[in-house]
Length: 247
Length: 255
Image 1 (tube, rainbow over the protein chains, first blue to last red):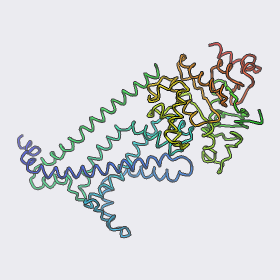
Image 2: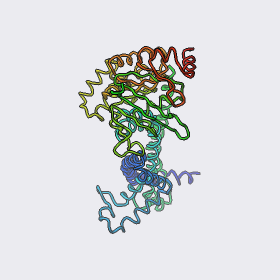
Image 3: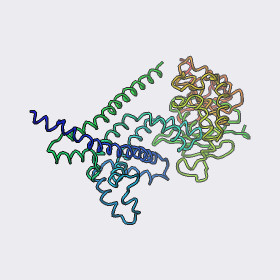
């Protein structure tokens, strides 16, 4: 039994390698923060293109829908491997894009950020869409009848209301994104799980994995609680709203 | 009247899929005239109103606002682009049954936003105008409040101020008191009555027979997508010629 315990919870191993695993986890966080910001922006752009009115924008809308469908359907690992495996060999691109090492980060870091942004942008676009569609149609009508353009109505009326309706699903996506940063280890970014693997093959002990897992828990558990809180608060707000209408 | 038509509709047809909502409506509204449109639900009266500011572009017919044919835009034809939207929406204000105030903006911001974004007024200018209008509708002490903290009647008055802030030449009212509790109806109708007295051109879709009798220059009764009868309120409301009008008024006045 103690052998079993030791395989997963060897505090000596955890202590010896704590610094290394933590360094790796910081890389996860660094991928997460940049990819999250980019995906939130990219997703909003996609969602807004999807809402463009009229026949004129039909091709653009179709293209966006196709993009979202494809990137939601394809395993992220494929996207990561595809980018890191192909980009260096696209000779027509400048070297700084083929092998990006911006802000002192290595190229696997940027390949990972790109892949996660492309995929999570599609996820986020769907979250935004849910928010936009939850804004009552009368809001757009009111804005348009005051002479606002579609863009003005989106910017001043629809999007500000849409984002208040989606923090819970958005946080869920962000939790997934944080966990999926471990996939970038596959292309040799020294993140926590890859470090854990190296430690495991050195010591034949799995405690480093547990350590990495705990680090994720420390960040994601509060996020999950926050989701619950937001959902509950939102429900309270809806009930209050309906009371007011009755009164 | 014919010389100075503010709004003129000719042969308006509107379909929603297989449903013929408007089956050829002709009407002229003079500058400063107040027209009340009555009719059972589904008669097409709200749709008619929404055609005037092109929230529902009609399939057939012509609409003239201040002498301009708004159905013949620069690239007339398909969809919203074919219509003179800017022209219409800056001259025609509309107030909705459900208020449709912007919930994330204060009463004041509801009235200033479009002034700044659409008309390009400075924020000081927009603010002054909004304050004046909100005072006029009796809400000078509510400028900083959000819609959810206002009663239905107060919200509807903010909505009227919001539409007026664009300096419209025509105001459309789409059953604006139907979603209100009975005791709040009067405060909204009072504002509309004042507006009528000041000479605003108004098209009012309503179930308030008393208001129509008192304020309207003309009453129009619609049923089945056509105008059944129209004339001065005393005639249409008290001695209607058409059987359908009699029936409808009988049902409404019974309440």
